[in-house]
Length: 289
Image 1 (cartoon, rainbow, N blue to C red):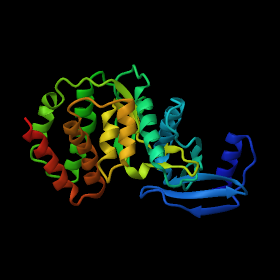
Image 2 (cartoon, rainbow, N blue to C red; image 1 turned 180 degrees about the horizontal axis):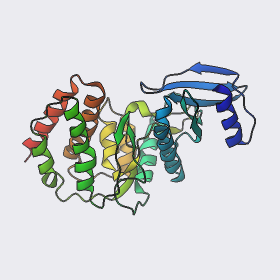
Image 3 (cartoon, rainbow, N blue to C red; image 1 turned 90 degrees about the vertical axis):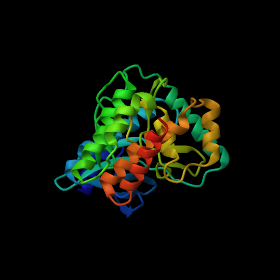
Image 4 (cartoon, rainbow, N blue to C red; image 1 turned 135 degrees about the horizontal axis):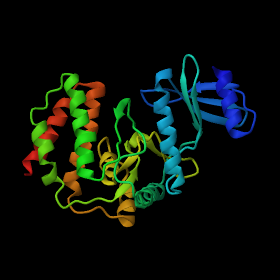
């Protein structure tokens, strides 16, 4: 396996590469993650079962599309493929450090710039992908309300039902979406899609970087909402974003609606208290009507 991966890297970079050192690094709970090295050259390697190759291919496509916007830094995808025993994704290695206030403000400004890049196709993406390890369908849809209702919330509710989840007011919530999103007409924006604090950092050179995307074209507020879900980003990030591309009135309510998707997904992945959290969010949303 290691020889095959090294040969693929060599072919894609145009420089011979052999894996002389490999070491496990932190990288989430879904994949095995390693640094692979030859001398001064190193790469970030993700490994999973061969059936997960499509997940890696979609991640590489998302990173390439975000990279093409020339806005916020993402790790450059090098190559991906599979052997008999593993699927793999090789990415540019970035040395991460501790960000200054200015670096986090710059991240907010750069994310806003990515969200401003025109996306005329509607809402969705050119392929389905995953959020964590959960399938995320992305059919092109002209209406944001329809896309979010059918391919985000209803999709997660269906998965939760198979898992034994109990969400007694889910149909009321889905029926209420036209009222909850009344007068909100977002422009289609390329979003990271899974932008919690564990998927953003600052390099040792002080450059903002985001990674591990679940990208699609959406209301830009889904990214901002998720930054607030698990601990939040530094205040300077929000200052930078607001200065570059201020959110519209009503965001404080919409962010709960948008984060419901991720809480439902966490229930589908991990169970536990996420069911109660999701039901509390549904009650809060319906209480505004």
